[in-house]
Image (cartoon, rainbow, N blue to C red; front, side, top):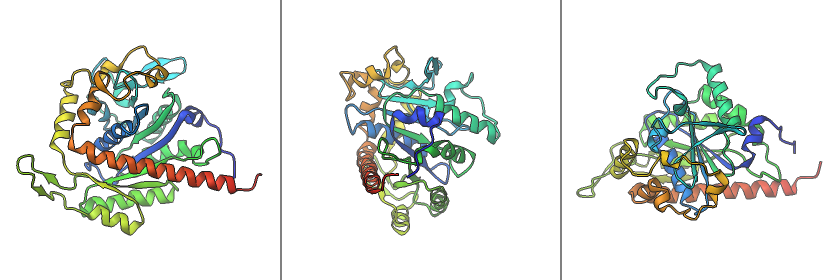
Length: 330
């Protein structure tokens, strides 16, 4: 098997164990909120887990607001080793990087052609000092355009596994149950197959609305279409996520700064290594956003999804390791 090429991107991401790319063919299906929930749920899989969130939706960055970092004091700092991500919690278990942190005015629009987008994505991948991460969750814009091509082009060296890194980047697909959204998701699936990007599975988002008063479930956008598509296309179905008013209220409160201690309070002088070895890795006063999120109904659903994502990653790693072990020495 050919040895992977070494590039600035592959060197920088050598300390990241797993890369998960969140894709959706259509906008408005909850891809960014799903990325945030996946990151928080992965943190809950282990008290020592460390996760990074990379926002590649350059023209519509929303992750800073969703995690309470849409404030002036939440900014990217330059160190001798590269850009330091913005941390959500004091223990520095969840780091975020977004172009939203680089704008002088958070309301400014980004009007860039493809080459400038490519340069920004290359910088994000090669210059951000994540430290040791268990998972890097990459939120992408809807569709299959410049950002997606640039991302996979720069990640290409990581698609050649070796004994030290028996894993490759993989994708999670997000869609609502609507036929229109599912048709667009099929295009994203086609994109992954053309570029040999493995797919961990499919999440059907906004699948029903549970009335907070009576508990009756209304299938606002339909139900079951995603599961049927996953079965038809040979994908693992990861779960069905209903619309959760608790989650909506939480994300609104976080974006307004109404969750005490969330967001920019994570900015301190501790190094990522110190954060990973903190004494309160399960939350508490150090991670109010994770605590509040764990109280929502959505967190219970996403907990199961995260477990399936981890199981899928582990199964792929074992299969690759077995294949590498069986391959004749060159």
